[in-house]
Length: 86
Image 1 (tube, rainbow, N blue to C red):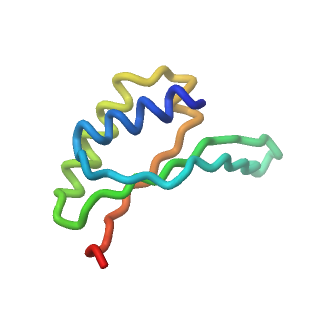
Image 2: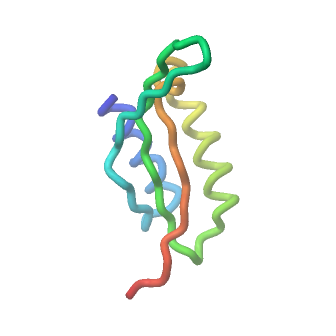
């Protein structure tokens, strides 16, 4: 999963050079039938002065275009805002 995560980071930084990332985390959950699903979760943080909706829409559109179906089903991405610098 390292290659898709690094590609995701590169794409995010092309849209917002100041983007920061939380370390990837592997998360497993089971559905009601006991089928276990495992995903790599990566949180992307953009500065508060960025257009969050435009970033999110562009970012997920680009991810869907470049990642293969197998990687897309295993990668979960959250987008949040960075607070003001201390």
